[in-house]
Length: 301
Image 1: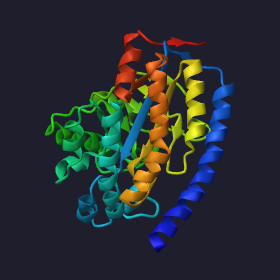
Image 2 (image 1 turned 60 degrees about the vertical axis):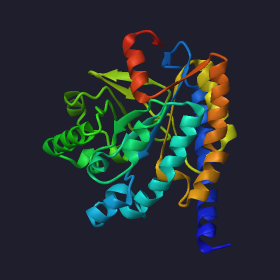
Image 3 (image 1 turned 60 degrees about the horizontal axis):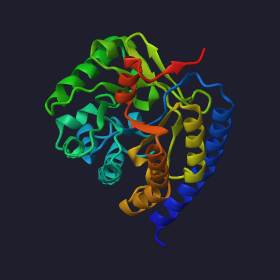
């Protein structure tokens, strides 16, 4: 075995151990928690963070933005991994006819990249949201800096005919919600961790917080995921799963292996639930629109 395989396998085992603990905690918490809202049927929402999307950005930014993207990997490396990962996930969702939210970094629209073309050419209508312009922490930005980021996102994505309505804060650093409203966003993914994750959608001002429920990576256990989905189906609650494109390995082969082991079994199981009429697939934006329409939710007080 080569060194890269050994390194990836070691990393996967560590993540598997951490993920199982997290999933068990979430499973128990979701079972015991009194539902904050009850829908007509379970919503399965998936959002994917595109932190870099292209190694070109790593070259352009000359390493100055590395710490805003990943603790250990360079922006160039993350971009290279995501270039391999995106087509795999795009094919997966297209083959299963499942729409998801891709939260894409705005700077990608200003460089040579296939990300937007790939998503727009899909036969599945995905929600192409925003993940900041340069992937900077919004809590560390002044109001002027944050508005400049949002202005650049709007101008850049407009070139592809995209008006982003969903926002995922880089590094989950939630701030400047008033500016999201100003720039026409409908929803965002709030901050989540093992304590704050939940199955709930909340309106704050004119925005909808599509709360995160569970973070996925290559160590995720598909059987535990199915049990968590069962809880959401029973409680008729929204289950919002999220991950980064770089969460499933560093080579195309390892990524495909991780997808086949974790994501695909869950989606296949969810499709069976959808066929039974107890689950529906939503994006962040479509979920917000349904809640806004008043057709779906019955909140528990």
